[in-house]
Length: 186
Image (cartoon, rainbow, N blue to C red; front, side, top):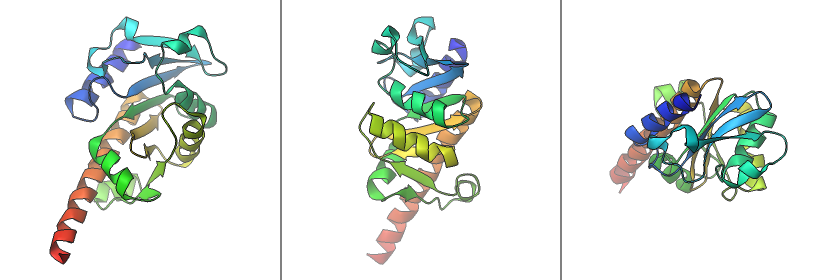
């Protein structure tokens, strides 16, 4: 399974959805999850870059797991997700700083597939963020953590990756449309 995590880590970096050492990926495996280690370069994941931790409860492995492990746990406990990708997509971060509670896509694919993209608040690796992200992801496949990045879920990593890509694409299109419209008005 670490190879599948590595494949999507490489894709995230290759397509500019995350810088190498930021973001994290997990996959649910029954009552546990495989999650990238804290500080792992997503484009260089190997067997040692992924750790297994329980979904209920904590363990000594939590100390080396991603700082967002608490968020992944809450999402797995409160949704039907089997895979999660958290990326630091640049346009998504920008839009989360410009909008109040959600990004409403203006592109046809974003409108059709995402409808709206909730923006959630909470500090990195905090219980507030975990609760807010899990709540948003009960009704949506993707959300944006204000000033921090995207979090997307799926049954497979492929689905979480597609959602991540779509959220970023919709945010990029909206940013440019808003910029052009502001110039026209100005």
